Length: 277
Image (cartoon, rainbow, N blue to C red; front, side):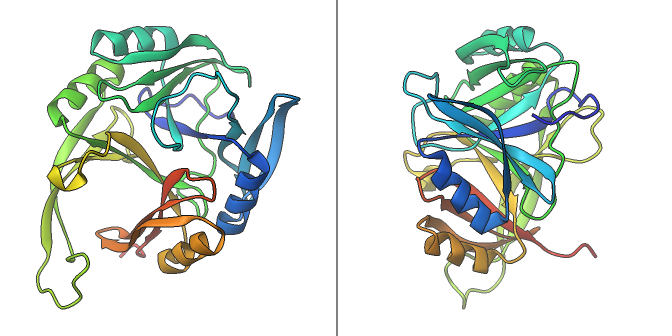
């Protein structure tokens, strides 16, 4: 993990992916997002490698070794949140219905302590603490993480959970977007959204959406968004590289996004942003 000044508690600062074929994962993201790689640790059992874009850190990929603690469900990028004390944060999560998959321990990559947890709805995330920050160097840049979201069926419960855990909250806003799947439709669709508000952090780093009946039996989960220049072209590139487009490019207030799977089935989103006016 990259070093920086000390982040604010509750800030999403790092993103990891467990891969059953690290070489294939490297190839996919290099061709899609222009990533370069730096292997930090390597052994006969596997590797931990850091992705960079323009020489700046994006996140990490490591070998999915049988027996390692992980959540059930499809593979996805996992958010890491900075906290003052990983063990204390782990205990606070349990107090509000969270589950511990990996107790707080020293990070093998060095620099601090981490714990792998589940929200009360079963979505995995990591808390990390240390003298040095792990804040992502390339956040918001082309090819890097530009947003994170949580999808929930219990807005009040999750707000209680993150408030107790981090001191953060999700704040409701009312937004609108063009209709999806009907080019002839007029007007806009109104919907609710929730900004992640982290105390003493000026810029928002994430949001939340409430899952309704249209989501079917999909489990609550976190989603990571990578910034691209052209969402349509990048979605087509995903398919070309052996991935899958799960949600086609769709207009939203900041720009256009698409939910995709990489060539090994791990889910993430891509997003192109409109120029700031």
